Length: 282
Image 1 (cartoon, rainbow, N blue to C red):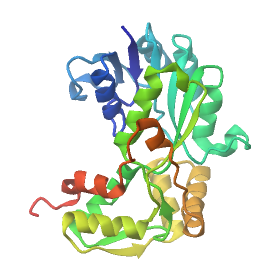
Image 2: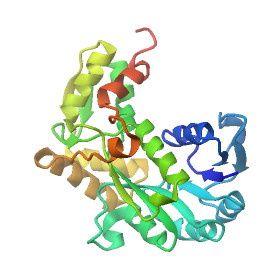
Image 3: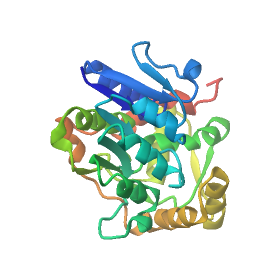
Image 4: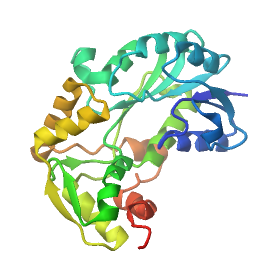
């Protein structure tokens, strides 16, 4: 019986990874900080601990066959001892990385995702280099529930947002079949949409008119710093959003090729999550 450790199991992608693995009939172990609040299916083995604690990671990874790794920080600080503890127990790692990692750049130039990929280079790795997550547009929910104005940096930035269920489905495939070892999969949604277009889709999904107000770059940078990003990442992120106005994110066919079905659209996502953007009285 295969046993797979899932980190980030209570998160937006991780919960779907857990469900997919259970449906495939494998044993799932989840590293969680607060088991009583995890809300995971009862058949999941719970390993209590924090991913920043190498000892907890080592215990969780004991006698597992593969790991789904999600590093939750904007910084790689603390990642090296975590990876060392993990890979002493298991060599097969599927890591949720980012599309903007470039192989012709030094690891440090690729941000936290490139640094983690570099730390994992001695393992049997699969890197899921994801584009923008559709679920990250939930950050607009408070604005939409309480008003009709959505403030964003670079409203005409084009992104090929991927549904979290597609990310999880690819992760499950990669965890269950060694033919994916050594692959770097660039994963996107099926179309490129500007943030203006995304908000229009949300407005249609919830039946409420919305308008956009552009956030100045300096304000967007400060918001990232307040959220915990280091200054280098904040600067690069703001610059990246601006760059997507003239050079939008590409669309890849990796998801439909691997899954044998069309990738889920942002409109699919908006319909599924519409309730999260509605005020309680709507």
